[in-house]
Structure formats: structure tokens, C-alpha cells
Length: 399
Ligand SMILES: [Zn+2]
Image 1 (cartoon, rainbow, N blue to C red):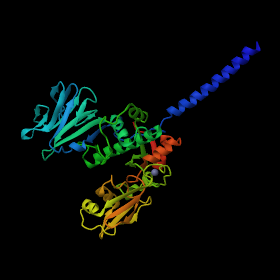
Image 2: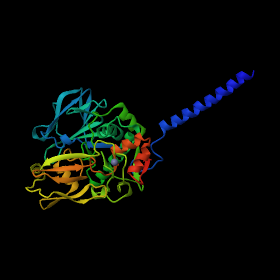
Image 3: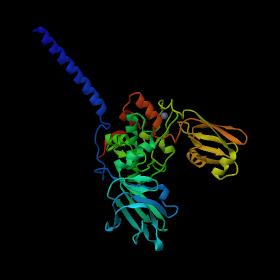
Image 4: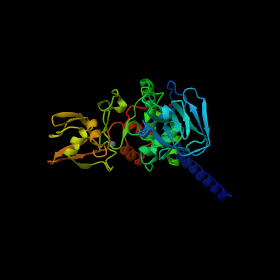
């Protein structure tokens, strides 16, 4: 009976081989992003993020469209007492009422600070967007309406991810972005506590912090990526840091302390990046009328415009024109970040206008998103991408 024995032997070899391949694949797909755990003071689990809704902070017309698809409660923020039970709210508003009261739908509240808690997560709609968590509505000292979405960190990140990075980017790039966004938010919460504004809000929902549009950009994939990196953050010397990121560095990221109010540190020291070369912002050219620049900067003369000082990644630190001087980042924000993709440019005078020829998109500090995509396409894992763009940082689970 040699033949069956041989077949059996061969079959078991094949089975063992398949098992090995399976295990290798399994470990590839489930390899954790983090390499260890850390304990941060005051952080046991995912914190609630207080997100100031920029369009309603303060609300321009002292009222904002509000609807809730299902039951809800209104509570006092100071005491937690239930002030009202509602069945649902359709095409209603949260608004400043007469004599400085606060209106939620047709109900008036004498309290100046309330929480609106829907019974079902994600049924709260403010303006044209749905939100998870609760909505805090309050009147400031000037009697202006402020709206803050209070949302658990992981739900918040599922909304941030797709707003900050295209969700068709490779998995490792998305995971790296999720970890950077979580680190940024955790750092901002800590910062808000130090600044004494934490009771009101931690972050804005726009580019002043990181972009968050409620559940507008939240998908199954976004939730899965955030879930796979749950609790993972970047630390430097055991502490959180402001994990900046931007679209395209153009070849070299910048030292953070030259552009932002942050200390000099290894993870934000800037480094060469060869991975964003294929991106659409590798080279750009834009022409802007001098009159336009004058108007945006609020000056009469922008003659002899030049980059007077550059950072190591060639982004402008100081720009001079008409005998005056601007910080490069302020100059770009004033002229319009959509018109001037970055400050890594050369200028040509064309009489009534300037031609800017540059590279990259964004401020150039921290993680380069297009480079992150490039690294992921070459097979690098999220941890490797993060350690590349934040040199010396540790990737650890903090809850
Ligand atoms: Zn880059």
C-alpha cells in the first residue's frame, strides 16, 4: 500500500504549506498598528470630543436649522436635569428666543446652556449635516448662539478620516491618517484643558483644527480603519504632540516650530520625502493680479514681491513686498490657500500680475498625505509610514 501512504504524506505536506500561507496572510492582515501600550494621565477610554460647529459658532443669524428623526431629550448642562422630552423635530430650529431665552423647536428654555440628546445615535441634523453624539446649545456673554457637537472620539474620527483623506487611498495610508488625526485631537483636548476652554470646546470642525462634517464622509471603510487603530496614538518622550499633517510637501517636510507655536522636537523636525513625487501638486503654476494681492493683504503696494527667507523644505518663512514683510503662512492664508497651494514657490513679475511657480500643497509640517499614499503603495505599513513622517515618535495604544 505504498501509494496511499505517499499520497497521504504529500497531502499533509500540502496542508501544512497551505496552513503556513494562511497564517502568513492572516498575520499580514491583522498585524496591529501599534507596538505597545502606554498610560496617559486622565485617559481611561475614548474621550468625548467637543467640536465647535464653525458655521454656528456663533450662529450668524442667531438660529440654526435643526431636526431630529426620533425621540430626544433636552437637559440642563449645569445640573443634568431633564427639561423636556420630545417625540421628534422636523424642519425646526435651535435659536435665540425673546428676552434671551433659548428655543429648541417651539419650546423655550430659560436656561442659557442646554444639551439636546437624541434617543438614536446619528439622528441629529444641524443645517444639512447629520451628527452622532449630542448637541450642546448655549448663549455666550453677548447673547449669541453657540453650537457644539459632543461626540465620542472614535465616532468623531470616523467622520474626520474621509474629510481629510480620500477613502480610496490604500489601507496603510488611511490607518496612518487615523492615528495622526487621533493624536492631533487628543493633543488639542489636552491643550484646551490647559487653555481653560475645555468646558466649552476642544476643536473646530474646519481647517482651524481638522475637518469634520458629522457623518457626511463616514463610510463602512472609514469606520473599519478607525476601528482597526482604536486607541492608537503617537507619543514623543511619553507625551502627546501636535501631529500636524498636510496634503503634499513637495520633497521635504518642514520643522514645525518655524511655522507653529510648538516646541522644537524630533517628530516635527522635518525630513526629505521622496514619496509624493507622483502627486498632482508636484508642480503647479498660478497667476494672481497685483491688485488682488493688494486687496487681500489690505495694502496699496506689493511691488518687488520676493521670498526673503526660506525654511529647509523651501517653504517661505518671510515674504517681502512694497517695503513690508509677511510671515509666509500668513501671506498664503490672506491671499487664499485655494489660490496659492503652498509657499514653496518662485515668483515672476509680469507687470500687473505675479506668476507663482511652486511645489506641494499645504503648510508642509508633519505627515505628507500624498507621500503617505506613495509609501503605502510600495507596501509600507502604517507604523512605518508614521515613523517616517514623525521621526522618533512611538506608536502606542493609549486606551
Ligand atoms: Zn511629501
